[in-house]
Amino acid sequence: MIKITAIKDSISTQKVDAIVNAANKTLSGGGGVDGAIHRAAGPQLSKECKALGGCETGGAKITRGYRLPAKFIIHTVGPVYGHENNKEAKLLTECYKNCMELAKIYRIKTIALPAISTGLYGFPKQEAAKIAIKTIKNFVKKNDCFDEICFVLFNDENLYIYQKLLIKI
Image 1 (tube, rainbow, N blue to C red):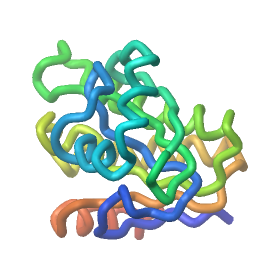
Image 2: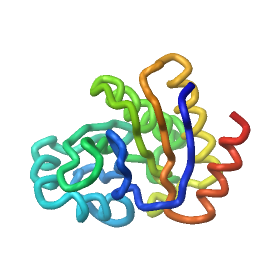
Image 3: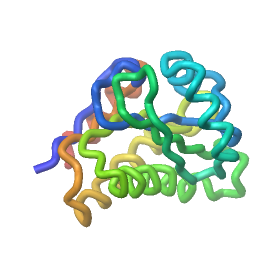
């Protein structure tokens, strides 16, 4: 049985096979989770990201973890709420699905995910959490490849939302 949990912590300190980065389209680092991951991983991450040529909204790309405890970083670009022609929910679903597909390909057993698009990109936290959990739940029903999935959240509000929703599954 797969373990799906939620904790309040910094995603850059997680001792898992892979962490997910809520990245921008250039994969060049920035604010929030993205900036914290780039700072912690070191300058080699920026070099590898430049070589990837960016990432579209809803897409996902993978790099090494460098100075992070995680072996891999899966970068995904979440939707900017109110700027995606009413496709925000579909694009956010694609983010989580594509991250899980990459993790499966790379035989990742433990993965930590943030609340994608809920910071600077303005996605409503409750709606984003429902999409995240539903997408992950649907993926693991069809794919028995993970041992543990952890949502690593930056604040108490997100932690409460995720914990409340996870009780229901």
